[in-house]
Length: 543
Image (cartoon, rainbow, N blue to C red; front, side):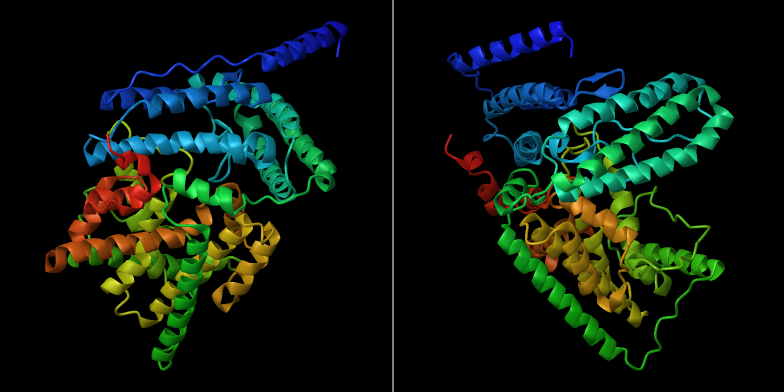
C-alpha cells in the first residue's frame, strides 16, 4: 500500500468514526398509499435495486457495497410498509405478500446467510448446477460463438481473476462445511474449463489466453481455500430460530422446525411401512427386472411416458395444454455404480415420470406464459421452491392413488421408496440447520435411511442435494412438505365442495395460481385465512 493510499484510508476511517458518533437524522414518515399500481412500481424498482453493481463483468460484493445495499433496503422496506393493501382483493394482497417475502429474503441474506462473506461456493464463476450463486456467472456456450457474442464472452472470461481476488477479501467468516463445498465447486469448474479449452482453441483461439487465466484463477482460489481450511471452523447451519424465521417470512411456510421434523419423521415411517405391506402383497409377483440395455431401456422409458400422458387424458386428471407433448429419449448410458434414481428408473420409470412430465416441465412452460406483473416473474430467494416440488414430488403419490400404477403392482413399492427417500432428506435438512448434524453426518444419515441401500457412498445425487440443503434453506424439506401442503389443500377443498369436488378442476386451479407458496394458493382457492393470518397478522388488523 502506498503512502497516499494509507493517508486516504486513514482519512476515510476517521470520517466514518466521526459520522458514527453524530446523531442520526430522524426518519421522515412516508406518505401512505392504497394503490396497487404503487406496489407494482415499487416491485419493479426493487428488482433492479437487488442486483449488485457490475463493473467490467465484476459484481461488487465488497463490505462497503453490501452495507450500502442493506441501508437502501431498509428504505425499500419502509416504502412497502407505507402501502396499505388491506382493502384489496385477495389476488392483489397475495402480490403484496410476494413483494414482502422477496424483500425479507434480501434482508435475511444481509443479516444471516451473508453468502458473500460466509460461502465460498457463492462465487461460482462457471455455473454447473442449480443453487445459490453470485450474479450472472459464465454459462459455457456452444461453439462457435456468433460474432455479436464474442466480446461479451471475452469480458466475462477476463473478469474471473478479479472476481475471485475480491472473493478472497470478502470471505471473512466461512465455516468448515461451506469451505469444503467451495473446494468441491472449484474442482468442478476447473474440470469444465479444462474440457472447454481444446474446443475454444479450435473456434476462437484469441480467447484461449483469457480462458487459461480464468482457469488459473479458479485453481488458485481452490488452493487458497485448501490452505485456510483448518482455520475455518464452527457450525454452518442457521440454527432453529433463524431457520424458522426464514421459512415463515420468506417461504411463507406456516410450520415450526419441530412440526416439520414430526411431519417428516411420520411420513418416513408411513412410507417404510407401506413398502413392507406392498412387498407382502406382491410376494407371489416376480421381482422387477432391471433393464440396463440401451434399446430395452429407451423403449421402456418412452412407453412409460406415453402411458402417463394417456392416463392424464383418460382419467381427466388435469387439462392437457396443446404444448404438453411426449418427449421421448433416444439414449441411455448404464452406470458402473447405480445412483439412487437410476435404481428406480431401471426397474420401472413410471413412478418417477410425473415428477418432471406433470410437475417441473409444465410448471416452467406455464410460468413462461404468465404475464402478471408480479406473480408472473421468476421468484427470488427460492420462494417458489416448495410450491414447485408440491406439483412435482406430490403428484407422484397422488397419481399412484388415482390408479396410474394399477397394472404394475411392484411399481408401488418404488413409489413408496421415493417417498421414504424424500422423508430421509427432509430430516437431514432440518438436523443440519439445527446443527445436530454436520454436512457429512447428514450425508451418512441419508445413506443409512435410504431403503435397500440404494444410495452409494459417493452418490452424485446426494452430494448435489446435501449441498443445497445447507446453502439453500428449505430445499431438502421442500419435497416432503410441498406434498403434505398439496394434500392439505385437497382435503380443505374436498371438505368445502363435498361431492361436487372434481380433481381436474382442483389441479387446474393449482396450476393457474402460479409459482407462489402453497399457503397463498390455499388462501386464494379456499378463502381460508388461518395460515396467512398467522404469517401476516398485521395484514388483517383493523384499518
